[in-house]
Length: 261
Image (cartoon, rainbow, N blue to C red):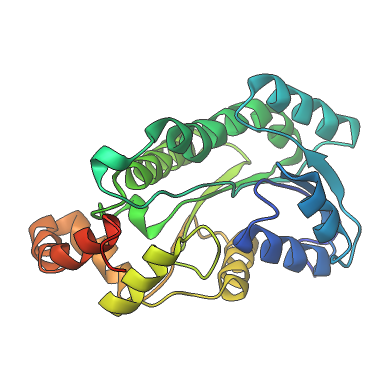
């Protein structure tokens, strides 16, 4: 039996690299999709690539008024069974170069607000929430101070909400990819990963892993090797990860300051 057939899934950040692949796989599985993004043009292009025609909702999710409009739109179309908080941005640079407001708003505040907003709807449908985090939500990494802070926050929020709703029919899940081959990574980040020997996963594979978690009872899924080991190691022996990253700091600073060209 196909768990996803006939389920209504609200997917944010649908036109991004991971989001578009998740949309394709959900559509192929027979899910009914409500897709959000900021670009009506990109949403229209994606719409024509899917097996089942989705509902599209172009909006700026940092606006609480537009969040309310999205909730009303979903209710008008019968509610949702699954909320996937996938929208996100990244910044690479030294701390003094970072712009924290957008990172916090999009990566952390928006998914928190959408979870809060859609909880009554999901209670009615015994639904699921999947918050898309990152390996950097467990490992503080030089050059990504703002991004790490937001993903650490999202992981903590998800864990707390999981435990708060443990006696309910709602499942709350945390999904943590490592570096993925999408446009969220600047050319400097791609070159840095190549220089350090860090692997990057294809968005197709990452989407497959998210779908597997969605179909399972697994509350946490971390992708990548050795990243999964680093996540565990950082939780128990952070000083070891300190030393490992310190040995790479000169290279990271070079790329973060744009002096690698």
